[in-house]
Length: 426
View 1: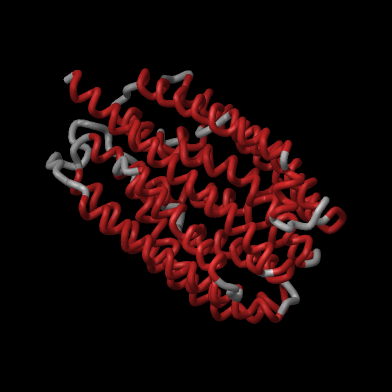
View 2: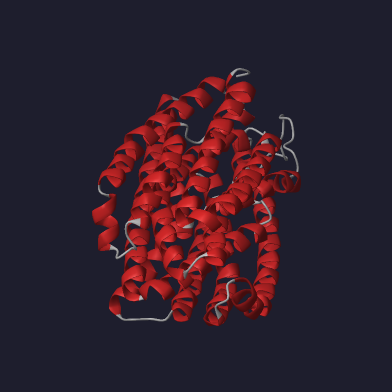
């Protein structure tokens, strides 16, 4: 038994190291991609590229139907009690549902591209990029579904490569090799995600599915997958809105140059959240297993490990970004001083996310999705209200203030709810 425990610990440590390595590769790839996009596309085209990324992020999140974390939880929890067949059926059903909704969302975006480009953003040149973004949607979502299933299978390292690391690295290489239009870059993005989805599917089918126990044998059944999905969809949409809505509102009220300044600062600051989310992805299947087996001491221990990982990895990076914001953004040819001011404000929100990490994951993996939904609705309301109030007057800086406030609200709210609902009871 001790040997199995040691072997399991080594495997988990290897998965954590691999997942963080994948996130590190993603951070480098995305930083290089944003830098090259700002330098090689020019301010106007870079602003259009970031607008399309924001639209993809928001619409793709809606098309995933809130199934991301429920898939991870169900796969991990059912396999923990030997119900592998049920876990496999759940994963397949969720993947087919997301594929259908993503294809439909892509068709709608393709059809609406001229109206969005001219009526909403007043840029006819956005029509072709929006249509290319419609092609990205189903490919990206299939890669994401594969990634969340792999997280449930305790294959976080492979999941991070499939969901996050490979596609931006491919785009970075393409931009570095030769000039390319926004539309062509987005079509290449779709091809990269399609490749990732195929690789993720191969990794899932290669995983041993040996458990023969009946569904939830000897344990209280989990809530149905779709109940969790309906509850968590507002949560996923709110997280997408934190990144996408301020960018799109800046695009509606300001110039492409201001969009570029805020977008670059926002995406650079999000590298902190990227690491924290990766830590949560590594811990998520363990949280689900421990809660399913009522192993409270192990649940607390994994939560402490997530906290120390976030503090040790993210705080130095955050302070480094704050100190070197001006030279880093200048090297990216981001509009200064606006981009630096936005970055400093955005890092305040990332600081709260860094010191109170993964509590949304704890709540999701322990069946408290309704609490997350209430927090998500509050965040969206605050985000929209603050953005409408601040962006027309202050542009990108107003969007940064709104975003930082909402990130802080989410981190504090999740930590408070987790302490009341999980840690006291456990």
